[in-house]
Amino acid sequence: MTSSEKKQLQITACKVRMGVIESTYGAKAGHPGGSLSAAEVYTYLYFKEMNIDPKNPKWEDRDRFVLSKGHTTPGLYSVLANRGFFPVEDLPTFRHIDSYLQGHPNMNMVPGVDMSTGSLGQGVSVATGMALAAKHTGKTNRVYSLLGDGEIQEGQVWEACMAAAHYKLDNLCIIIDNNGLQIDGNIADVMSPYPIVDKLVAFGFEVAAVDGHNFDELEDAFNKARETKGKPFAIVMNTIKGKDVSFMENDAGWHGKAPNDAEYAQAMSELKAKLAELEA
Amino acid sequence: MADMIKIATRDSYGNALKELGAEFDNLVVLDADLAGATKTGTFKKAFPDRHFDCGIAEANMICMATGMSTAGLVPFASSFAMFAAGRAFEQVRNSIGYPHLNVKIGATHGGISVGEDGASHQCCEDFSLMRAIPGMTVICPADDVEAKAAVRAAYEMNGPVYLRFGRLAVPVFHKEGFKFEIGKGEILRDGTDVAIIANGLLTYEAIEAGEKLAEMGINAMIINMATIKPLDEELVIAAAKKCGKVITCEEHSIIGGLGEAVCGVLSEKCPTAVKRIGVNDEFGHSGPAKDLLKQFGLCCDHIVEVAKEFCGK
Image (tube, rainbow over all chains, first blue to last red; front, side, top):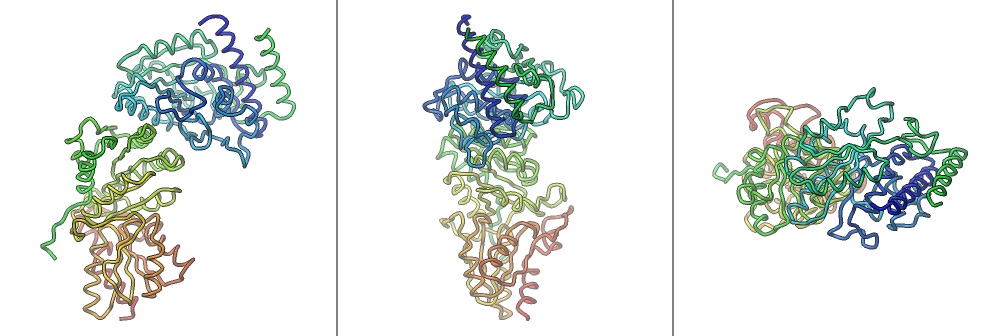
């Protein structure tokens, strides 16, 4: 990608992060940590990779995205809003009693959400079914699914991986956000899923390990995914939980907690400074 | 009626899928290594490219079916009731029920008539589990004709459906051409002394019980209630008003199934004395299906006994 294109993606990722803070602050709840760690991949998917139309969210031939780690919906809602699926101004209504922005993704209420998720391990199976259906009906659309690194402790994830390889679903690309932290602490201490890449390879995936905050590396991986034939593709992203909000970075405590007034102000001021720097 | 044709409703399921598969290209079938037992193998033989084996992984199968439904396919996900409704409950609840997607669950081997396999495979909790999911339609047909009609009706409606079939061959009492409607009960015998509402293999037992009771001077109304949800409340209330006493019969726990559904309606809208015949909050065990059904009181003779006592005779 060109440097100006990359700069634009970085600017968008920063805005996606601001939406994460706005929505979790507005909700006084939600999951900022794993939303911030995935801001680049959300941005890359919705602004570069996926074939979608915000004006026609149910377009039959669109690429599909299933947020298997459904709790990081502040990131998904923010990127959808920034992409024009619904107003960015609605983000602070997240989780409110009269809002359409449910605490976890709801495909029947939120434009652009392709599957209702929230219970870990299920989204990737649904994505596998979507990819199988596309193959079966001769469609060329692709299916993407984002998983947490803690989420892959769920056995169902590996049932889905087995099926994806068995049915040679080269139209499926799963992304693992390896930010290293889950609610109870370091994933390696809670219940180690490592080695993640080796496991995916053993399950029949073609795998790329990337820096999840680096757009060049994301681009290479997604290009390789599209070129890979006969097997599903997995991108394992090394990321920082809470990325770009200094006091949230690498702190499991920010998995599922909203910023208070002072924390909100500090987070937004840090992100605004970053945005100004990028736009300069 | 030893000369009646007997067919297990799991066979009806496989045959209905094959018949519908020939009519509708968008019908696909998923199974979890049980195609021979659930009889989806019948469909697989006819349409191998529309049958997807998911291996022994029911949770993933249910969610894959969900994904396929979002692309306009109409998936029938099949396994034993124990695993489809039990093991994969949360997948059914969150990935099919909550988004209200057009997935059909074909669950065979419901109830204790599974027989020799014993309690681990005798699911008597599936009506209860599936009924509790908002928007889920729950159907347990009584014989081959009704089972085939129910599969078609499930295909034709948009939304999630749980269909429960049996392993044991049961008498076919419906005539070909019988018209099945989801949510409508069927009066098989009119009566005034007691209303016996049954489904699944208990319906035929209830029909026979009705005849025996008539010989004893008890005029029983016999109702086949294949759809447990949405329940035909109008018919339940009408039967209760007419007879003043209701007996429910199901091959399911007395907790959470047809019996409690009927009690729920009647206690709120038409308080009526009800006796529930079902599995009494206990696990089954190994044995020949017919012996088990007798032992657990899921048979004509027990229905007659309960009705006699209920009617004070």
